[in-house]
Amino acid sequence: MSVVIESRTTTDLRRQPSIPALRTVSGADLEVPLVDGSTTRYVNLDYAASAPALSEVLDELGRALPYYASVHRGAGYASAASTTAYEQARRTIAAATGARADDHVIFTRNTTDALNLLARAVPADLDVVCLDIEHHANLLPWQQRGATVITARPTLAETLDLLAAELARPEVALLAITGASNVTGETLPLDRIAELCRRTGTRLAVDGAQLVPHRDVDLAGSGIDYLAFSGHKTYAPFGAGVLVGRADWLDAAPPYLAGGGAVRRVRTDETEWTTGPARHEGGTPNVLGAVTLAAACRTLTGLGRLRRDRHERALTDRLRAGLTEVPGARLLRIFDDSTDTVGIVAFTVDGFDAGLVAAYLSAEHGIGVRDGKFCAHPLLNRLGCADGAIRVSVGLGSSSADVDALITGLHRLVEVGPEWTYDEVDGRIQPVPDPRPAPDWLPELETGGTGCRG
Image 1 (cartoon, helix red, strand yellow):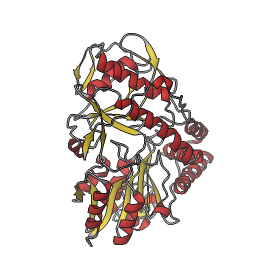
Image 2 (cartoon, rainbow, N blue to C red):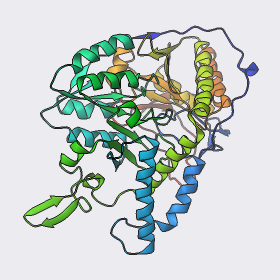
Image 3 (cartoon, helix red, strand yellow):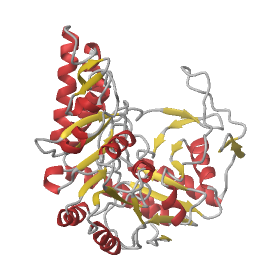
Image 4 (cartoon, rainbow, N blue to C red):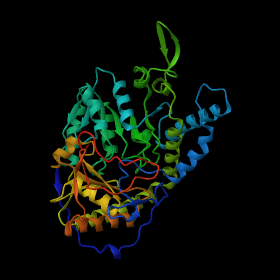
């Protein structure tokens, strides 16, 4: 595992064909202020953190919002409509993910919430295995229950051999693994991993937070036992996530949230819990979050994988080619033999702190990227980026103009340097002073960080 410098022939971006956005998303025409007093179109290259809402998702929200009411126990017409929409969302997501007929679809807050739920459901006497390349959402819940954390090898082939040996241990019941790295975008060969699990009788849980927005997932066809993903990364940023998977562990586990809806009957000295998704969905659920997440899944399925793949590949190739032409830019990767990536690229620029690069791109060019260690501290440390890196990510609303703006801004940074002053404020590098006004509906902008730059 290493930081590598990728070299490619210098390309004049102006001569390359234009790549339009594949879908309309919220904020596509957002104008943002710069520190010099001008404004510019916001360039969103931070899809891997939270993707903007698809127009189809906003349309679905508009249709459902007038009928918003409490679900499952209301006699009113709006309550019946909300209940129907909520349960239909469950069925839509099951179909979109290729769930088996007896799988549960449980709505959660996000991927982290879904994986914590699953971690509580795995029988306590069984061992879990995960890799050290995981996002904290798929590392910390397993670490807390004493899982075996395997150090990934420099190649996928070596890592798969290592996993095969580890899964052969009879006490191992579950392999929890990412579908696509949130740092480098590299995908893991889930079909081969699922075959390893089948041979050893091990269940497979996939962190699909970065996979589902970019690739089709078929649980029944692939042999994946559990899949977790988030609405806010899947073009439905309304606070919902989902865990899809086998029922037995989930029905036997203690309720994730003890409360109304999770029970069959209650006495002061005894409670009988229900089974099925309701067992873990105590309290009033996020109806609109579920409905919009289902709308996003339906839209992604309707677009077809080939169209999405062509658009993403064209943008990612252009991005990688442009970055290799920026002096001192170093692209990160985990595996020397990986060949498939989603639209996520992480890099550093020699001589420039990652936080400064991100602050400069925002303040002087109106470009949004992510910097830090991306909630994947063990991986970033191994990649030699203990102080963090820069991550760029594209999606359905991205265009070649977005990529070209980034490359132009980075060239200017390296060749000319920042044209404003920057300093660390509340744990983050920021322009000082920062004259950019807040939107008129906010009193002020809060850009400081808390804790480490995760």
